Amino acid sequence: MNAIKHAHSGLRWVVLALLLLAIANAYNGWQKRQPYTPSDKKKHLFALIFCHIQMLIGFVAYFLNLGGKVQFSGATMGNDLIRFFTMEHSIMMILAIVVITVGFSKAKKIIETPRRFRMIFSTYLIGLLLILAGIPWPFRALGAGWF
Ligand code: HEM
View 1 (cartoon, rainbow, N blue to C red):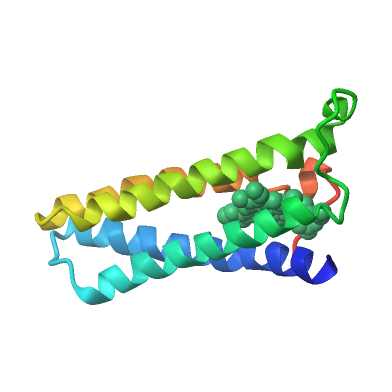
View 2 (spheres, rainbow, N blue to C red; view 1 turned 135 degrees about the vertical axis):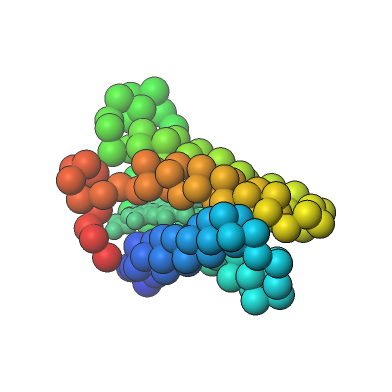
């Protein structure tokens, strides 16, 4: 479990960095009305792929549940830490990644350049905010660390 947990924990930084780069790139392209090039698409796709990898590792952590943080009994739902990982964290992250995925595939169908960048910018930004809100940051006292 340790390997999965550490991979899942450390990969958050890669996901956050790639999302920030993709959002900055999309904002720039949108504001400057630049043409949407294959290099732009690669940046947006790369961020999407790492979100999906992180989600898959999350599913493994969830279903193996070796850390014992996923429980469904009524009593354990009263425990902040158990409820966070069983419900809030997973649902929020899946939602974020759905928004990002829909954004990417909708953008693919848009030919007009500024609108294509704007679609990536707005959906990836919503996704990023949901992810930031769903991470068990150390200051939230959920027993998780920075890495
Ligand atoms: C972008 C998406 C995600 C990010 C950035 C993320 C980030 C994290 C972080 C930072 C931790 C704490 C690790 C530690 O203890 O230091 C964690 C734990 C966990 N995550 Fe995620 N996560 C994401 C998606 C998901 C998804 C989609 C699921 C399941 C459906 C999931 C299931 C879990 C579980 C079960 C744990 C607790 C592991 C344990 O300690 O037993 N995560 N996640």
